[in-house]
Length: 165
Image 1 (cartoon, rainbow, N blue to C red):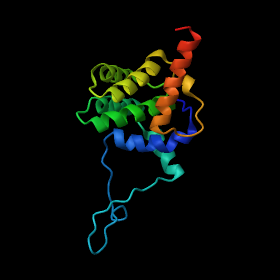
Image 2 (image 1 turned 180 degrees about the vertical axis):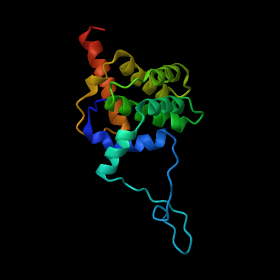
Image 3 (image 1 turned 30 degrees about the vertical axis):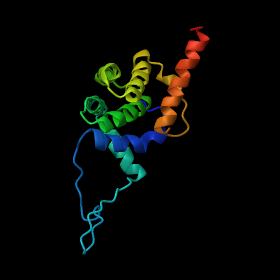
Image 4 (image 1 turned 60 degrees about the vertical axis):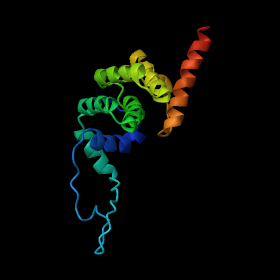
């Protein structure tokens, strides 16, 4: 499976952990607690070779299915995050089978009560369905959420303008 944007490797490694719902084993090194007993948890940034291993072991189809489940969540924050991260995931793995995630995006774009989230889901669905997501490339960095959806809207507006719509 080809990856278009090597700079996204760290994101994919994180997504592989989050969206496969695999529990992370916590050692005392991961816990920020002291003898006094604080409850803070520190994030461990994986080294480049660790990211490569996680990517090689990642079950891309399973991650895509978990994105679809996240898009159907009762929690609006989870749905919003899944739209953005699922969009990035699709850009990273254009050859992956993401039909179920595409169906979940379509359902969200039809039934979401938040107009902003419904619109973003529709933008992502459009690019997935039309397979024109390549028009958002090249990306020289991981775009922030607002940036990604603004760029998607610009591409669609440009297409409509050039078609005389």
